[in-house]
Length: 454
Image (cartoon, rainbow, N blue to C red):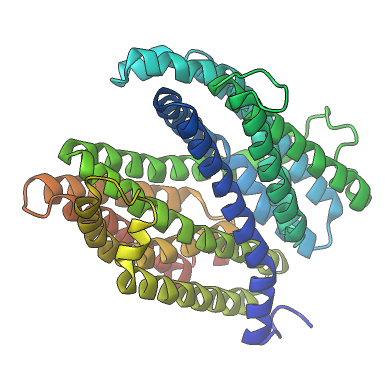
């Protein structure tokens, strides 16, 4: 049965079969960061602060470099649907090349991160500790970006289960290595934040080894690593053209949330604490939307490769239906039990517990709108990536986030009585603007239509 002939039920099953394990792998990846934070917090407040600072710095650079790996997903999906294994190999290899080059360019920023962090107003002692972490964990940028390429390659081939299990096993290994190296358990030396950095590097290297082994043993027809050193400048240019706007789009979005955190800190410690809790809750729910969005990218890429407009639009409608269903569930939780959700992150004996919960409950009400805006914009972005449309969406997103969202958050947060609610309202306004523009581009403007393969 062709994609065009598929019923909406078949589209739903296809999206869920791919989206559920991808969402699970996103949640497992988020759990790794949560585990690092908890264990560093158990060690000392200073290592926790340095770890949070260092991992935030690392993540900001990682999202820039990950654009090339994310470009691999729709391109491999299109080539695979067209039954072109040579193009699958070419695209994936050059994705590995570009990701390695991106890591090489980003590594110096981590090696000399202390002066950068001090220029950003961070405590000198904490900045020095963060640099100690990044001088080891920074090397994991190489395997981390290569892992992202191979995950995109496998997702495009609808082999999401292996991504989930390797991510879960990597998370377990990371937790065990943290336990041994941070605290000096099981006969290992007590290394503190250096131990966490080593654990991160080992985790990424083992995940890369697992994915490479799977590609070689299970998918030998692609000969993915055969003569990997040989350049393919045509494919290199194709991946570069599609990938750099994705990286900058992610940078614009992550920068918006960083700016929001800074504004919350200006309002006060309690507001910042409540913001962190509410953002952790919404980010966890958002992992499901990312998984569904990636599934939509793959399915759209398949239809795009076949020149199948009917299947593309029908699959897009079902992707949005599933996303809206998930949004409905989170709305019920966020509006129904906000005190319980916020309270889970606070010690019962915390002196400021009541005040933080009060602020957090207000933010959870805005988070309901936040989920609607963010869920729809990431799904629209995923579909546009599936049809290899990334440059104009990058501009739309950046303008929405930084010309509308961030200024609106500042004005509403500091020039009105709304304060923390105003900051979040600005975020929501920017996300809704991005959602509207991206939806219009996919459904109505359809710039991708003229580029469909004949």
